[in-house]
Length: 286
Image 1: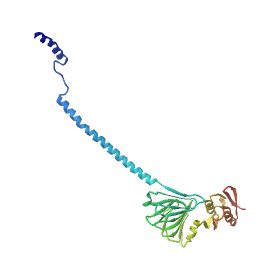
Image 2: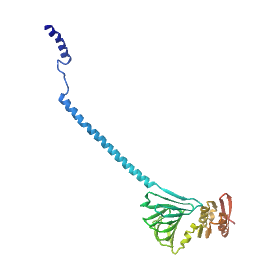
Image 3: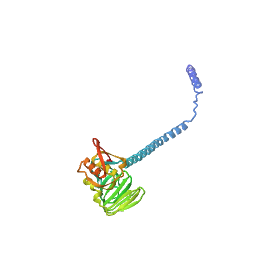
Image 4: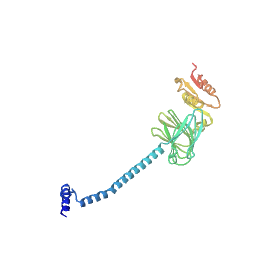
C-alpha cells in the first residue's frame, strides 16, 4: 500500500511541475471565449447580405448599360438607299411614302425610329409622295423641307437647293433659318443664301426627269453637263471658263450621250471630243 503511494507521487509531482502545479493558466475564461465565438457566428450572415447587395447593384448597373446600349443602337442604326449614275429607282419608306430618285441621289433614314420620327437626310434629286401622318422632314446641306402629307420635288446638289410643291403644303427652311410656305405650283430656290419663291411655276418641268426629259432655263452650262454625266454614267471634262455660260433648252434621254452633247454644244459654239471610253471633253470651238 505504501509502495503504491510512493509510485504515484513522482507522476503527480511531474504533472504539477509541467502544468503549473496542477493549474492551467488561460488568457480568457471559457465564458468569454464562448461569447466571442457566438458574436463571430452572428456576424457571418451580414457578409452574405453585403455580397448579395453588391450583386444587385452590379446587376442593376448591367441592365442600365444594356438599356443605354440598345438605345444607342436604335438611334444610330441607319438605312441608306442610293441611286447610281445612269439609273432611276423608287424607294418605299416604312410608312408607305415613296421617293422617286434621280440618278446619283441618296437618302438615309432610321427604320426603327421612323414610326414616330419621319426624318431623312437627302442628297441629289427626288420626287416625294408622302403619306399622311406625323411631320415628314427632309434634311439637306442647304435646306430643310417639312410636310404633313403632300407631293413635292427636291433638287439638292452641290450649292443648289430647289423645291417645287405639287400638292398639299410644304415648309422650306434655309441654313439661315429663313422659312417659306409653298402651295401647289409654287417653287423656291436658294440664291446667294436667300430663298426666292416663284408663283404659278410649271411643276411638270420640275419632275420631267421622271420621264427622262430634262428642262433647263437659263441654267449654268456646268449644271447641264453634270446632269448629262449623271444620266449617262460618263465623265465630261468642261473647260472651267465655260462653267457659268447659261444654257436654255431641253433634251431627252432617248438619244445617245453623243447626240445630246452635239445638241447642247452646237448652239453655244462649243465642240466635244471623245478621249477614252465614256470620257469626253468640251471646249470652245474658237
